[in-house]
Length: 61
Image 1 (tube, rainbow, N blue to C red):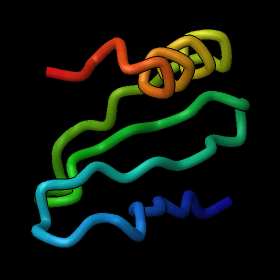
Image 2: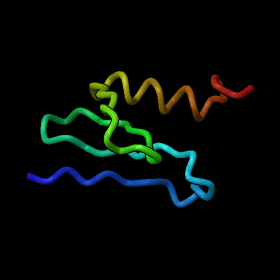
Image 3: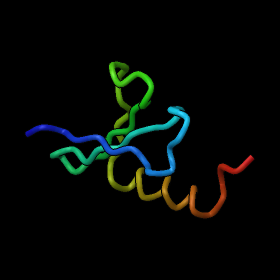
Image 4: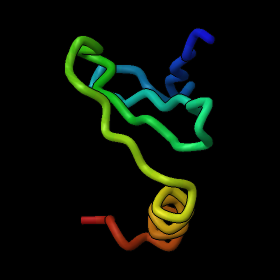
């Protein structure tokens, strides 16, 4: 099975990340500028917690 990474439509300057659903149910996250670098892999619970944190503004500077 081929893994397809998706980039946000909000990405304009190339400084973005891409995500992919893995066959295991995990989520892979990689640097869009250099996809040859290893991806970070999160299980479903970790990914859900991360997305919730983003939505709640926990990572805003």
